[in-house]
Image (cartoon, rainbow, N blue to C red; front, side, top):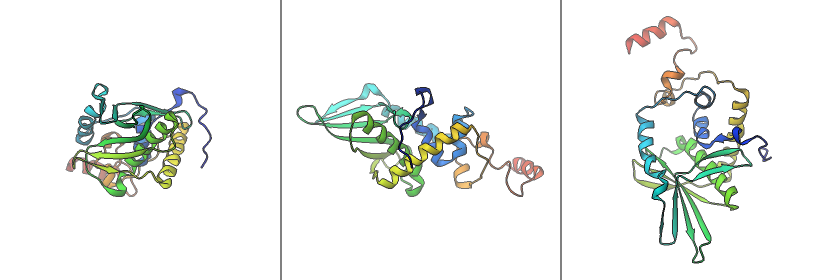
Length: 220
C-alpha cells in the first residue's frame, strides 16, 4: 500500500460518501459516480431524516467543555477526499485548547456486525481527513444508530485504517478506468439497494434467459 500524496486537482477529489457505496458494492459506486444515477427507497429516505438535524450547522453548541460542530466540511489533500461529518465533538481545556476529538456518524438502523464495514470505512475516512486538517495523531469515533438510539464505539484499528486506504485507492482506480463493473447479483444486498431498478442485477446472470426474465417480471 502506497501512502504517496494525491497529485490531482480539487476537482478530482473523491466524496467520502462514495467509499461507503464502493465497499458495499463497486457497481453501485460506479452507477452513482460515473453514470450519475440515484434512486430513493424507504431506507435512504429514513436515513435522510436521521441526518437532517445532524447536518444542521445552526445547532452547533457548547456544553460542559465540549464544543459540538454539526455538518463540518472535511478534506484530505494527501488522499484526495472531501465530504461532511455528521457531528464532531471537541473537548476543550480551560485555555480553549483541543484535548480530545470524537467523530459521530448517524445511521438509521441497528448494528449489523461485519455487514457494517461500509459505514466503518466511511467514518474512518472522516477521521483521516480530520487528523490531517487539525494535525492530530488520533481521534475517536462512534456510530449512532437511530433504531436503538445508542452510540457504538468504532475501534480505529490498523486493520480498519489499512482497509480504508486500500478502498480509497481501489475507488480511484475505478473512477480512472471509467468502467462500470459487471452485474453480480447477491440477494441480501441487491434486493434492499435503492438502485435495484437502475442496476437490474437479475436481468443478466448465468443460465438466465430473456424468456425467464420476462416471466419473472410478469409474476411480480
